[in-house]
Amino acid sequence: MKKSLFTVIALFAMVATATAEWRIAGDKIRTTWAEEVNPQSVLAEYPRPQLERAEWVNLNGLWDYAITDLAAEQPTAFDGQILVPFAIESALSGVQKSVTKDNTLWYSRTFTVPAAWASKRVILNFGAVDWSADIYVNGTLVASHTGGYTPFSADITAALTKKGPQSLVVRVWDPTDSVHNPVGKQRLNPSGIWYTAVSGIWQTVWMEAVSKANHIEGITTDCDLNRNELYINTATANNNGTLTIEVKDGDATVASTSVLCGVTAVLPIKDAKLWSPDSPHLYDLTITLSEGGKVVDSAKSYAALRKFATERDAMGHKRMTLNGSPIFMYGPLDQGWWPDGLYTAPTDEALLSDVVLTKELGFNTIRKHIKVEPARWYYHCDREGIIVWQDMPCLALYNGNSKGGMWGRNNIGGGSDSPATREEKERYYKEWGEIMDALRFFPSIGVWVPFNEAWGQFDTETVAEWTAAYDPTRLINAASGGNLRLCGDILDIHNYPAPSMPFHSSDFVVVLGEYGGIGYPVKEHLWWNKRNWGYIQFNNTDEVTDEYVKYATMLKQFIPQGMSAAIYTQTTDVEGEVNGFVTYDRKVVKMNKSKVNAINREIINTLSR
Image (cartoon, rainbow, N blue to C red):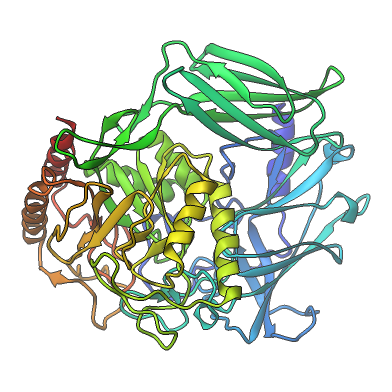
């Protein structure tokens, strides 16, 4: 695209409905990146790296907002301005107000469609809106979506006026934990291990131009390492036309092919370079869609050759493998929360920083804990070389509550699942399927985790079977530390603070899905002044590091006995939890990085050897 067009698009991206001064709300701690947030250019990076087009406009920035009663009509006057895409409860939104199930949250702004798009279709995209959203363009309902963690889009061409500003209104209802939706660790009354609610738009809003004839809607990739073949499936708006796919390694083209729409592209890769944490090799893709010999759409993407599986070792232990070799997956529990943006990192550099810190600490894995990140976070994991265990955000149902579910901790066949209603189960399956659809592209994801610690756990065997059938290319950890059932690929123990291995299995991979939680409250870097959470607490870097190394040394003895992975709690402090490697504001690393890296690499290499 010509530089002049980029300039035009950048100018359009800066348009907002008003220009009132914006300030970070509240007086809580914040990251250094918060000070870099500019309402004129918020999270300006391309938000969908798995399918990148040239013509797009970022709609982040200042919007009008209002909080009304649930039954109220669209307001004619608004309460003020909010910085999108930061949740209304966050400091970076500039608002920091709460909404409940009795409220409706409204957003409004105008935008202008670039003149160069006059002959094209315009697609409006939302990265995520929590929880139920109705989207109106010039008064026309163009989309409705439920679920707080998945992207959705609308073709808004028919709703656009021929020229001038276009009106965009978003209506949101978010009950948080007052209704049994997938909600993760959000709570209307946060305390202890439960965090501040997140409502409304919390990922990038943007629009793109596509051909009226046809366009690429998405791609998925797979591979066969025995054949050194890469498989590309490309979804298009209709099944007409031809797809041409080129695979490049740097500047060199290593494979190319053309197939009819709807047909899997098979691309042999000579001297294939496999993806792994130690060598996270990615191939660049260019996908071109043609009809009648004329190019109607093109996009950039990428792919990796890698395979996650299981096998028994010489001692009869079931092990996880990557590319045919046993691997000990070791990493932190990563909540993905920010003191200034809550669910949303202030900048892309901030989003990347937690991944980089994980690598610097010597880990090869992250367990993304009952939250889903924006696509760029998984892209960073792909590039940096981090295996991801992806949790499903749990239902608000909690073990031991009035619904009747009970937690049988670390006991195979123990506990009782929550008797979720049919509607609650339908919501779960809908959103879990949409999450897997949105994330299955990313090669770094190696394990799906449907349930955590019996929080809303139901029909475990059925859910595990459904998950495996939906995506047979990953491993299934059916219930991390929850009511353990003999299903999926993995039996997952939780034990705090020290590591433990209470049982062995020759039929399932045995992992320690959570341990540690060593607390260190660093003064001037705390979310609140009331009790801060840690399973045990120390007062300086040396003490915390020594305790971590002690636990890691204990962990090492379980590997020859069949333990195949471990997840330490956790990457960062989060609100009242002070058991992170780094403070919640990311300003103080609380352990000696070189000592942690050394013992972590020793643990990972134990199984490799």
